[in-house]
Image (tube, rainbow, N blue to C red):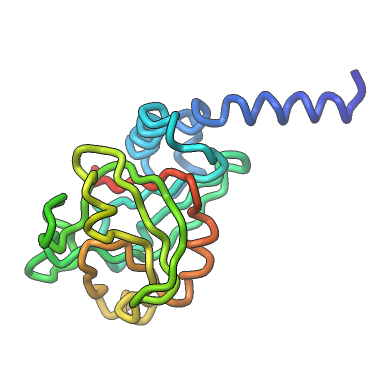
Length: 198
């Protein structure tokens, strides 16, 4: 077997084992904890029949303060992680402290919902181009009827984060206008987005 064939075989093996390798990735190279990675691996396994694109996953770590980049997009092939600011819902943080206090799946709660989402199509709505999300777990199964999406918002920016606390959404994953195109392109369609608090 020549060098080119060896590289091709190694790439095929890596692609076939990408999901198990996620949990074993060295923590030093990642912006997320081993426990969050294990949760993402479990979500991929649980919903493997729904999630077709396994090249990248998103993990929204709502245990972090809103001023910190806590939406992590992990490339399963390269191991690269890109992290972005993301707001949580008003109902999850009524006192506007910047800390997510609770999740809710209820209509009208204006809260963030916990669980695994399937990224869906994009559309042009009141927040501009947005990506729909389908809730795959009991804790977020109302995401589509609630209109929970990924969209940009003026209340999410580096400047606001430096001042202390991002604004809040109505339960959506609101990202900065500067990161909007990048996040929408990285996360979709048919990929996993996991919302979790460790």
